[in-house]
Every structure is written in C-alpha cells, then in structure tokens.
Length: 342
Image (cartoon, rainbow, N blue to C red; front, top):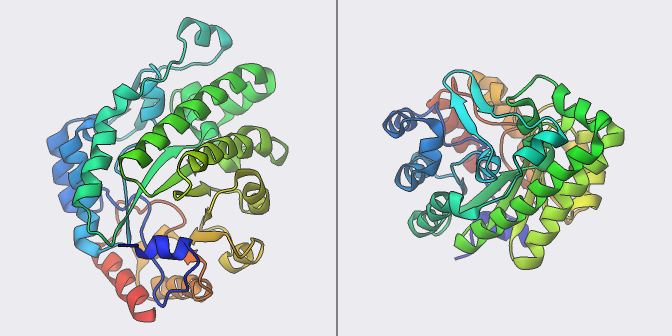
C-alpha cells in the first residue's frame, strides 16, 4: 500500500494533506511518561527496542498521524563513534568534549554501527507493527548541529564554542564534520534497509552560522549525506529541516538535492513556498505555542498551513518539536481541523 505521505512525494494532489508532528512521541503523553520511567535513563529508552517501539507507536494509536518518526536521538551517532554521551535529568545532553585536534588525536572517532543495533531493530519492529497506511521516517542530526554538541559538550545558546573553532581551526572542524558525514550515511542507509521510507536530517542550529559559513558547514555536508542516501535507495525521500535558515532555502535546495524542507514558525510559509521549485515539498510551520494555546490561534495557524497545502506540495507539521505542556485535546483538535478542512 502506498501511504499518503509517499503519494504526495510522488506528485499526487491530495484532498487531505499528510500530517505528523516533530517529537510526536514525547512528554506531553501520559503513556510516554510511564514508559520513560520504566526505561531508566533517556539513552536506555533509545537503546531498548521494545520500549522505543512502544513510545514510537503511542502517538499513532492516539491520533492516527500519517507518518511515524523513529524514537531515538541525534546524539546516538557520536555515542556510536566512541564519544561519551549521557543525559542529565532536567538539563539535557552532556558529552565528553572534543575541542581540539589534540583531543581528536587522543580519542579518534570511529563509527561502529553495531552499537546502534538496538535502534535498527526498532526500525525493523516498527515496519512490521505500524499500520500499512503509515509512513516510517528515520532521521539523523546534521553534521554541524551534532558537531556543535560534540565540541561544547552540551547545547549552548548560540553555539559559540563550535563557531569559535570554525574560525580558529577550520581543519579540525572539517575533520569532525567529515567523520559525521560518513557515519550519518551509514546510519541512514541502515535505517532505510530496515524499513524506513523517508529520512529527515535535523539542522537544529543553522541559525547560529553566519551566511558566509552556511555552505561549508551546513549545506555541503547535508548534500553529501542526501546524495549518498538517494544513490543507494532511489525510492527513499529526504527531508531537511534547517531551523532559522529560511533566507537560505533556495541554497539548501540547490546544494542538497533533498525532496522536502521543513519551515520553522518564524518564516512566512507562503513566501517560503513561493521561493522553491514546484518539485520540492515544504513541511511545517505551525508555531508549537499555537498548539499549546489552542482555540483561534490554532485554527488560524492551521488555516495558513492549509492554504499552502491546497496547492498540493505541503506536509502539515510544527515549526519545531511539540512542547511538553501541550494539551492532548489540542492535538485532537488539530487533527479534526486538518481532516475536516481537507
């Protein structure tokens, strides 16, 4: 069976556009919170095939989204490269920093796909257990975003540690980026071999890069990944979400060859759509806080997305991940609006 999302990718005009939400498996769901307690640490949840499968399926059971995205984390890639990664409760990820070429020489990065075997098994399980009408999406982090965590050892407000390295020692940053490109290619190809149909590359920190640096540190590495994945799996589709880079969307289209581009909530969706070729899909860009607010804010946001979706080239989604305080009733209302308007 060809899913709604894949039909859109293949150029069909659909009465009702496909919808899924970034971070749709998450803490706003009581069943997720219970499973998370059972797992122990966040990484334990990512590496527990049974529990990761369960939390991935939970929002599909509740809401009937048109796509299901693998539950994991972008930092499993540096973890599989041998970098120490852990999560502090209430504070987020922590990594053993790799700040200099000497650090890299002392702790070489060697990607071991076997360390991610539980994640790949989760993809295989999901392919068997998801409804046939639901597209399965895999993902990885873009090299710049992941490198920013690896260098700083945590998330930072403006990615200053990685940006400073880009100025002081670009050869070192290039080495890290190149390692991440190769690891990401292997990882995404393994997800596609296990049953994913679409992969999304998350460039969460695109806005931290000055315009002159986007090509080298963001667009070119993502392009290498996308081209390699599509060469190995021609039927697969690639989505790129470069948060905060709306002004550079045409450059991302030209430089990556991806099939769809996520649009954050700070971008006028109609303007973004008009700047892109008809062959390229857009995705997003409902403000996650509009979903928290509900009511007219939600209705107006959905109508703006639907106005673009009626042209037949848009995937409904948020402009970033769903927030923990989001009421379940508002997600239910979102689905009603989309399916009714369609």
